[in-house]
Length: 338
Ligand SMILES: [Zn+2]
Ligand SMILES: [Zn+2]
Image 1 (tube, rainbow, N blue to C red):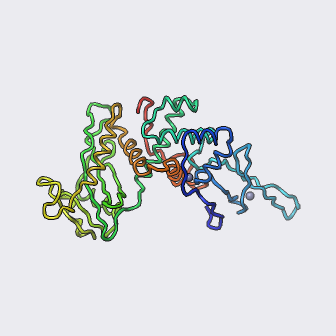
Image 2 (image 1 turned 30 degrees about the horizontal axis):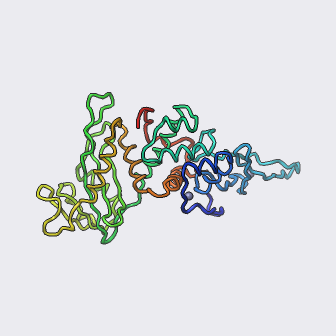
Image 3 (image 1 turned 45 degrees about the vertical axis):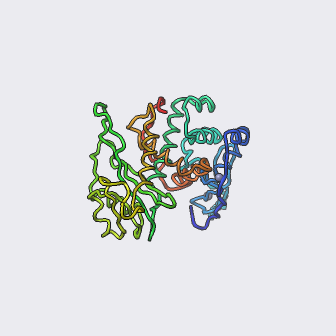
């Protein structure tokens, strides 16, 4: 977006439940699109790249077009600029012909703690394939939201870190996974966190300093006070601009000399994630999708739809130069997956 464009006021907070969505958006397609505009998911303004003037919106075609006439000096003919672009282009709704209200309804269903494909397919009357696709798009939003968390901590702020064994995958599967570990950190007071898996599909587990220290640099601000267990890979932390406090887990979970030195908060978060991801029917192949969705809901328990739309708009900024199509960050879950 060009810097001289007018910034439209984005929604700073709202709460919508299922009935309000249906009541407000079902019979008023423009209301639904406006709701998405208010969250930056759809563009509020488009500038013609050729004439540098604001485009007009054509509701019937869901298109932005340039209404400027160019005059040709020789012939004095006036010709209308031919620029036009779909309202959905480059956005979270790119390449779809679905009405906005159905997408809002689907998202609202997907962000409920427990949800079912069958129910949403019945409500919006989509094919199973469309539902699987949109589940993937939603998963991308929460996965990339998680991966792009701003760094936590700061001077004097206590951050607990821990790596924890997450799941032992079955070796006899075609796409076999090895053991999976989670690595995470959390601010003890404000509970800001990061959580990543230490291994991608078919890669070798790496819990060495060479793997962990760059992640710590990425996710934790210098000057933080880091509490960790005595894992050897953490030893260089003091040289990285952190205050490092160690608790030896083979002896106790809290340092007997100073009870504030512990990693209970991060252990609790990892335990919750593990429990959530071990529900019956879940498959280890998709654990990152499960836990990123879980953590998104956990961190945005209030106004979840609002926060999801803001995250989707951040990932797919309207009228960006991003190549057409989606990042394709996640694999599509089968329909049978809870
Ligand atoms: Zn809102
Ligand atoms: Zn133009």
